[in-house]
Length: 213
Image (tube, rainbow, N blue to C red; front, side, top):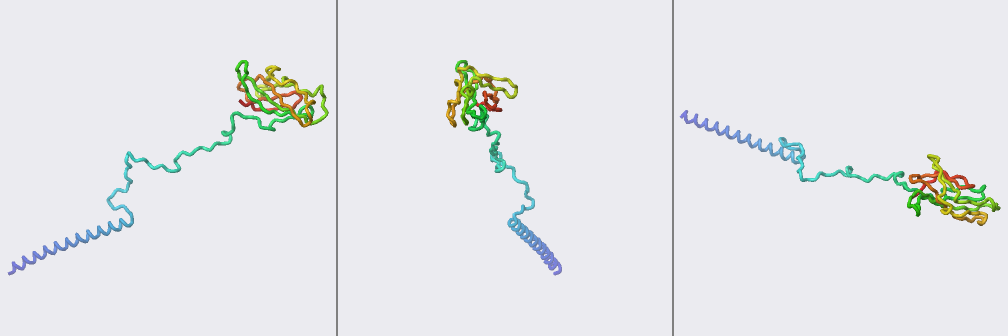
């Protein structure tokens, strides 16, 4: 009888051990499930999984930040300035013939000589306006072919190409007071000279005049 009871006791002990192990396993599974739910809600990375970002696929196109895109460089004022300056109306006006007249430069531009094709000629167009009276018919005469120019950097002087390439003498005494007359002259100026001092007889000199092309 005692042996029978001992056998029963051993069997019960084994069943108890198996039951406690199963209970422990269930508790472990429940704990893992609770941890998984807590991690999914908090957005955290489960323990044991890599925290580094995955390597992008070689065929994928990387995103471009808006600030990294090339934007056009604004044009500065100096860059916007024309490299071929032209005289503006009223920019170059000087008194002439003891303030009885005014001379205004209308255009100073480089042209091609029709005989040689060379561009070593500058065409000076100007306007003479009578502002006072009386005048001296023997002295108040402007001869365009007598106009000259000077290089402000080298002091080299340039004269008219020919009297044929200039307006005939202008007697502004024959111009009504307040009226004006236009004239021109071609000056022999080498290429590459872009600024001139222009000297018109009986007129204050014009300094730093730009030559347009």
